[in-house]
Structure formats: structure tokens, C-alpha cells
Length: 160
Image 1 (spheres, rainbow, N blue to C red):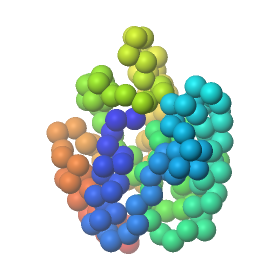
Image 2 (cartoon, rainbow, N blue to C red; image 1 turned 90 degrees about the horizontal axis):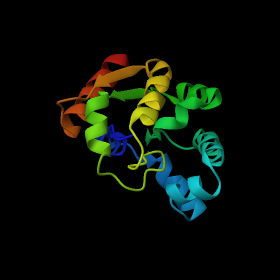
Image 3 (cartoon, rainbow, N blue to C red; image 1 turned 60 degrees about the horizontal axis):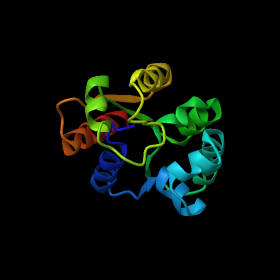
Image 4 (spheres, helix red, strand yellow; image 1 turned 90 degrees about the vertical axis):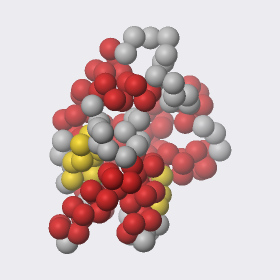
């Protein structure tokens, strides 16, 4: 959350001349409501079910660059599906940078500006175990989105 997945994903897709798919945007389109609304009405588990179902559908689509929500990794089935679909990239951003980016964000159901940051930091810490298993890990602090996209594109070319 806040690492730049959508921005970098779009730039990477443009660089690679591939379609770009934002899973959160697809869920919003399918559900006809915001992610915040899905979380508040149906709960996080329902949203994670939506992610899992969408990943299954994407297996049938042409090669693309996909941006996922940061919590998609909490389910083993999702991690396995992503690994089987292609190269998984983790945009590693320091907690300090993420906190600075998220301070003024809106519409993120897991960011509660009235609470302390400890709960969100704990969630981020727990997910590191899963994020660290990505095929490509890019340290994003101090880099612009185009620089991150070029870094990923270069690493993808080396892997081919």
C-alpha cells in the first residue's frame, strides 16, 4: 500500500508494450462500489475472495502487467497463482517512506488516520515474509516511478 504499484505497473506495461491490469480497479468495476465500501459492508475476507476469483480468471487472459493490492499475498492460493502466472515483483519501500505517502491518502480501508500507525506497521511487517519471496525485488526509496519501471524492465530482460 503506497509503494507505487499502479503507477509503476502502468509505466512498466508501456515500456514492455503489454496491457496493464489493476486488480483493485477490476474489483471496483465488477462490484460497482469502492474498495472502502466493500471492506465496510462485506469485510476484508469478502474482498480477498474477490481477489482470489479474479486471479483465477486472469490465468485465461493474455500476458500483461498486473498491479495487485498489497494484501493479496496473505492467501497461499493467491501467492501460488501469481507465481504460476509469471514473474512476481515486489516494490520494497521503507516504512518511513510509506508512512509519509499514506499520511494524506484517502479511500484506503486499512489506513485509519485516527489510529496510531502501529497496527498498519505490524501488518506491513507480517507481509514482508511473503513479499521477500518475489522473483524481483526493487528498492524504491529515492527513485522516481520511471526509474523503478526501467529497473524492473532491465531485470526482466536479464531473466529471459
